[in-house]
Length: 228
Image (cartoon, rainbow, N blue to C red; front, side, top):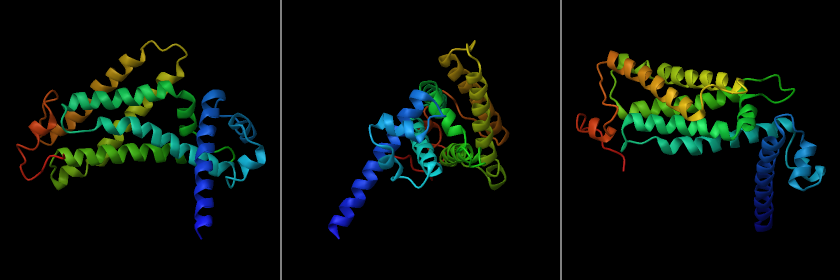
């Protein structure tokens, strides 16, 4: 039994290595790189590469899931309660823009569908739903909304994600963007804050953008305990 488990673990580790090799191939040669070329760049024969995946569609899904995890690894640490909300938002947008600028081909692959799958939008939707869930849950943690106002939490998070995505897509279309990446991140920061602040004010909630959230939220709402 132990040797079976060891074999399965070796297979999973090897497959994990090949997923990263596929990511490297995409970043080096673009979204159209084939499995044969991926195998070549990974330094293994095609049969060895192929036998670790059911088909190209499975490989594509695993690559996209890993790409999303890599992006979220940069973005998630920016969320917190010890910093002012504007600084938190700036950290999120900067991490988001920086990762995409650093990995344009991988981002393009994440936003596209498997060749021949006929489902171009599935993975892009999966990624956006991940962002929306994170932002929506963050809202729930920092502000106490009435039941009536809470129903706008997910649409607001969705609108923020959609806005950032649309701006980023348009920026990437320009061969020579007029706005540098740092300025783009700041534009997103200010724009998203205006969107968020406007909706919170309509619900009677005013948050100082330059005061740490833990100083603003929990003293006013003592039933919440600030996360450690």
